Image (cartoon, rainbow, N blue to C red; front, side, top):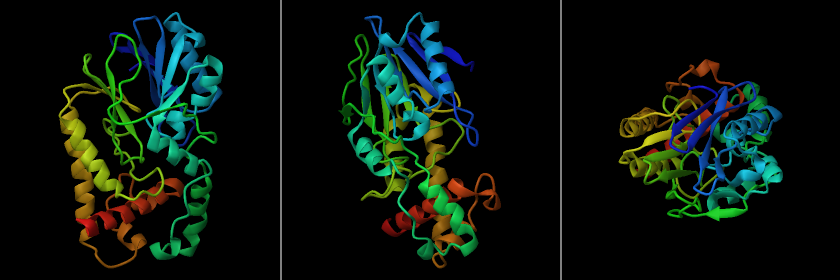
Length: 302
């Protein structure tokens, strides 16, 4: 897919550059309504380069910031929500987010809660990088939500029926957006075409994010829709991808269940990681350990 592409009638995808160190870009979506205005889903990272990509996309449509009617954020992570505050200042458009995500963003604006490194059995020489990863904010410093959304809401986009679907797991208030008439599903980081999204990356919750995620996958697997994800590229075969993601986590749960003893560190070191256990550093290591702990809790609850 090119840097700017029309993916459906009145819907355009924009590759928004991300800072080096992870995926190269996120996908923002520009949705035109029947009054000539534009609604933006996930404006991307809080950098000049990212903001420039959005402005260039608006210009390609013959529009400018004053034509932006709303900014919808699928979840709190900086590579999706980070540019919302600047775009709101430029356009005057409100920012919309699920109510649970807005609450989580307040808690995470200064970083993730400190993990139980002692309880996890983390070796002393690996603790500094984990503590540094915890201190790095993963949500914008200022909570951008102006309008709080709940499951089942219809967005105010004239000429379209786009419904909010609460899909927790990646974060507590992650949402997908279903364009019921156009057959489109904006999936954020809930379902990506090849990457396995991390879970539990929105702070502690009363429920288990693994169980939440599996239930949310079941909810959307039956949609006959073109999936418009937050990274990579639009794709079809949503049911098959949801099944693959569910099996990935069920397999991980079986692997964890096979090692009932040992610390989280010891169990995590025996599991299969895409880049290999030895390659995990900083935030990716923290995520791996956190998800191992979540899978242990999931196994204990089921």
